[in-house]
Every structure is written in C-alpha cells, then in structure tokens.
Image 1: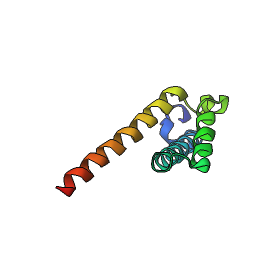
Image 2 (image 1 turned 90 degrees about the vertical axis):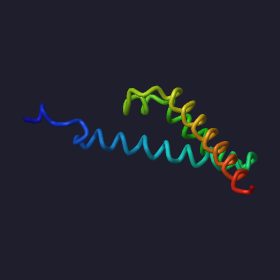
Image 3 (image 1 turned 30 degrees about the horizontal axis):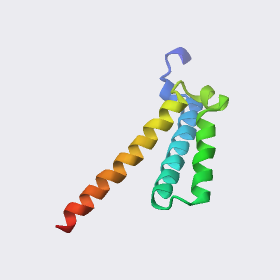
Amino acid sequence: MAGNKNLAEDPYERLANAIILQAVSDYRTALKKIKVHPKNRQAKDEALEVERFFCSGWYQQLTSVDGEYLIKRLQDEVRQSESIRGKKNKSDRR
C-alpha cells in the first residue's frame, strides 16, 4: 500500500518542505532588516546566502519551484508589505 501514500506524509517530502520554508523565513527576515537598515552587512550576507541556496542544485533536488521566481516573489511581497504598513501608519496619524 506504499504506492497509495500521500506525498505530504512522506518524511523526506516533509523534510524538504521544512528546509525550504525555513529558507523562505530567513530570506523574509533578512529583506525586512535590509529595508530598515540598508547598510546592514549581516542582513545582506544572509539574503545573498539564501539566494545562492535558491539557485543551487540542492534546492532543485528538493522542489520543482523555480528559485529565481521565488526570490522575486519574496522581494515583491516584502516591498508591498512595507508600503502597505507605511500607508496604514500615515492613516493612523490622522
């Protein structure tokens, strides 16, 4: 019955997903730090390290999601969330 097993229940699939989700979280955190402090060398290094992971052969073994696409989406997400937050803060001041 192993052939009928849901992929989400596969421990290797769960591990691969957890690795990617942690990288996504780390990348978001680094991008947010860079947004607040553009000269933060540690945050820039972290972001570059995660970008290298997203473009690596290991990442490609873990998922079929295009790494370059993921990088762009996460950058857009952080950029939009920051601009939305800025608009909320301005309207709260009124």
